[in-house]
Image (tube, chains in turn red, blue):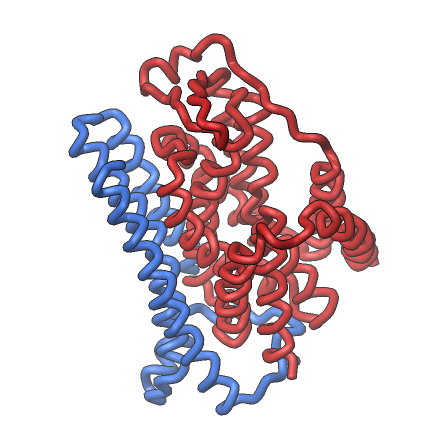
Length: 271
Length: 118
């Protein structure tokens, strides 16, 4: 029964993920560990492969909307991929109880971030690295206004991406929240460009550790197949139904659920 | 938009669909062969991929091989994406960015080797 149940939960996870702009990891890892009793190491690697699936699909459509900054994405991937290597090595040598605790804190932090109001920051001066690589860009708002943006604090952004990469490999998440924080908070990039570029980068970040977990044999087809197929189908449905659903209400309910799951993860880790 | 970017988009989408079909077929056959229980995954056992693949090849169990093929396609998509990005930059004569993309590509491939226990 578990495999079929997991398939339907993954459809729901992909659906919710597309609706709320989250990767599947935040849903898949708790479901596999708390609900289906799977060891967290299998859960993390199955989640990573599902993230690779959704983000490759998403990257396809994001490239078309002209919000994704391809030049910036390539530079910042240096940080996330190096971070993922460190994260994989830490995960390999850490007691899995710590992974539950860390995941619990990550869920709490995500719930808090989801409640935070989003406001756009604008950089007034272009950082020298950004000038050199011509990273600054432009996009068109829905009302037709053409927005030119500059990019601040590139080295700090790269450094923060390194940490996003560590957390991705360690917890089996896309760590989109941290990527957006680095781009929007530190580099002062408009929110829309930050989230599009983050979504585009997630697949490469997740692949860095997913490949290593795969060769180590942690990605078991019995778990990874229903999760990936479910998530691909669910996010496809979610993206299509998105305009018709009350996203704000769903977001509030999800924050509540996230807080409860966070506590359960912490309890499991500390026991 | 750059023609190559559009081609990357189409390529990624086709790749995800192909992988999805492989994974679905693999999953269905695994379901019929082994059932749907996850009890074996409650505790972690390290079995390297080379061992599982070798066993599947010896037993000619196509179901598991199809599932693994789906996983391999999925994992190679972002790698190919980085490769194509490097090509875009070379075409635009942006050699510094092409170099950065090449660095990401090499680091990605190096990171995979960490999963091989010696």
